[in-house]
Length: 64
Image (cartoon, rainbow, N blue to C red; front, top):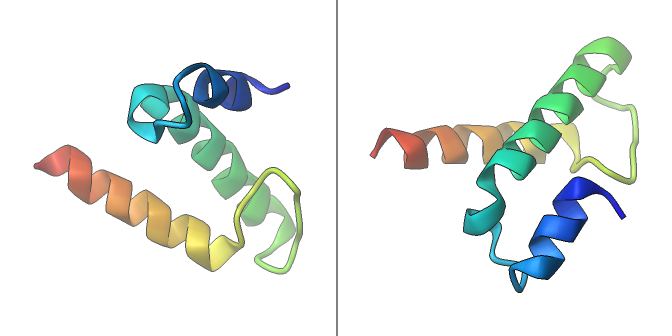
């Protein structure tokens, strides 16, 4: 079980309580897509376009 999955399971899948772990996962996924292209696939990462949207949304939430 990954750190992200463990944190989410421990916190009843409340993503807000695992923000740092989810941010780390998204940063890793972003690097993965930069290195391998947007068509690359990973079971751990959302599709590249969705990942970028999620990163943008999370940045907007943090700015509030």
